[in-house]
Length: 235
Image 1 (cartoon, helix red, strand yellow):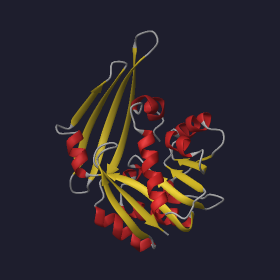
Image 2 (tube, rainbow, N blue to C red):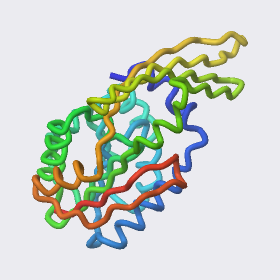
Image 3 (cartoon, one colour):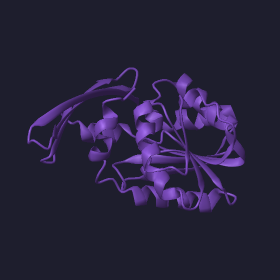
Image 4 (tube, rainbow, N blue to C red):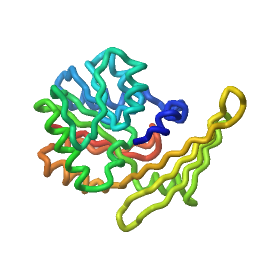
């Protein structure tokens, strides 16, 4: 899963405002948390947000991609990492806060998968713990892919995104081609494909309540990485 994506992820995300993401998490923890000590980064990728939170919290990272986890583990030797499916977490301890950032939740392609993930988080969350995550909106997808494709040419790397939408199911299929400049001046081609589902706010709220969560905040944000919605759930 995302084996090829791991090779170019940090290059693609070099302009990401990781400190801004960290600040949002810390603001929500301060607002709704109860002096948490442990954070689980669910869908941790290559560990950049986890790295920034690490000085203040005991951190655990989980990702479905073994390659992503290997990269994160090389960066950070003072955190615990696991390769697991977020719908079926089996960890040896509960955490005070769970986070899923960069629209990780949108990679669940059904309401059933969403409910399984919420249930899984519930089981791995301390009493009164928080689950903080973001999702992208249909408006963002339409803005990114007005003609079906999107090209990002940065000189040393060119990214071509090809997009198709299943309107009836609310599912987006994205084929990504990376051309990465090598030391010899030649470009290496790397391909990856992924699927996203755009959940409605009501679908997320209703599913969270079914599991038992209290929805304490739903907040729109267009400053970090396009239009997205942050949810804060409390056990």
